[in-house]
Structure formats: structure tokens, C-alpha cells
Length: 75
Image (cartoon, rainbow, N blue to C red; front, top):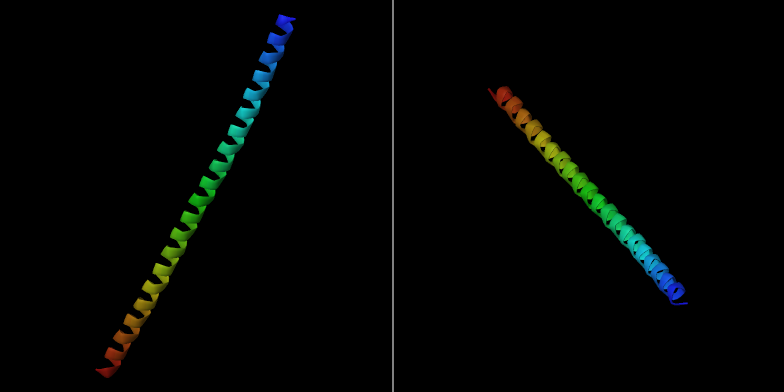
């Protein structure tokens, strides 16, 4: 009888440990997923910022070219 109770206790303990490991794995996967989303968002923001910078730079270059053309016309 004692051995049966000891075996039952150990089985329950093993089941608890397994459930805990499964919960921890889910938490880990959720954290990893969240981290990947954050990294993707940061990369997207960096790309958008670079694109915005390039558009402004292109606009300045166009304005500078127009100013040079006007200067040449005035001469």
C-alpha cells in the first residue's frame, strides 16, 4: 500500500512538472514571438525613416537643380 501511494505521488509530481514545462515553453514561445514582432517593427520603421530621408534629399536635389538652371538662364 505504501509503495502504491509513493508511486502515485511520484506520478502526480511528474505530471505537475510536465505541465509546468509545457506552460514555460508556451511563455517562452510567446516571448520569442513578441520579440520577433518588435524587431520586425523596428526594421520597418528604420526602412520607412530611410525612405523618408531619401525623398527629402531628392526634393532638395531637385530644388538645387532648378536654382542652378534659373541662375544659368539669368546670365
